[in-house]
Amino acid sequence: MPPHGNKPSRREGAVFRHLVPQQWMSTNKMDEGMQPFQQSLIELENEAEHLLLARNQVIENDKERNGNREALTALRKRARTTKTSIKSPFESIMKDIGKSGSRTAPLVKEICGTCGNHDEKEKTWMMFPGSDVFACIPFHATHTILDKYQERLEYEAKKLQSYVKEKTFLISEKGVLADMISPGVLRSLVTLTDKPK
Image 1: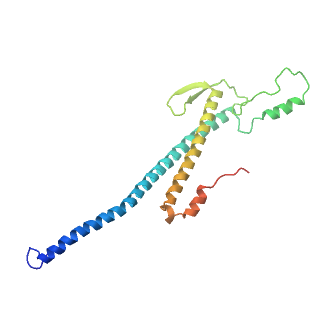
Image 2 (image 1 turned 45 degrees about the horizontal axis):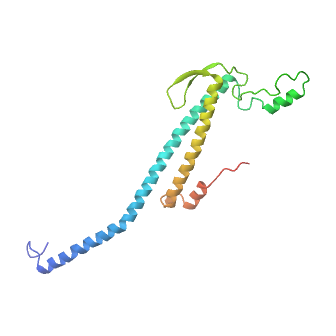
Image 3 (image 1 turned 90 degrees about the vertical axis):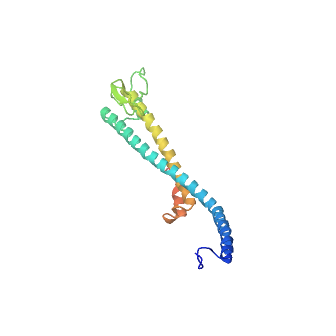
């Protein structure tokens, strides 16, 4: 406020008029400088949102995989088999070669790894994956459906995990995770692959 009452002097008014346009110009320059920063923050926020959605999907997929795995284990217990208790066709061939006798029987009898000696046609109640429909279907068909569904869930889990790695790496490259995990360490974790022995 001016010292001589309510009205500013000519000199103060001129200074005030000069300052206002310069202040506006400096804020416009600041806005122009902030636009790329703001755009990068928006992109980063979108990437982080996609990452969180993918992580939630991984959790849901794991729950479904575990439930399906438990159902397959229950079927194996019911049939009294394990993944390794059923002999391979090669073992059956070698056992039958040593025997003398008629060759009318097939050399190899296909045995389902889950059914074993259990009655394949025994009716089993099953809720179809991804629905609320219950059906009474043969034992062999039940575990075959669940096996195929488990394979699909495993594939989706690997796909989601690679997507999460990619998004984490992208966010890290932008420097957001640098305070927690250095980009070099994160890069080595993301590019880590399992090699068969």
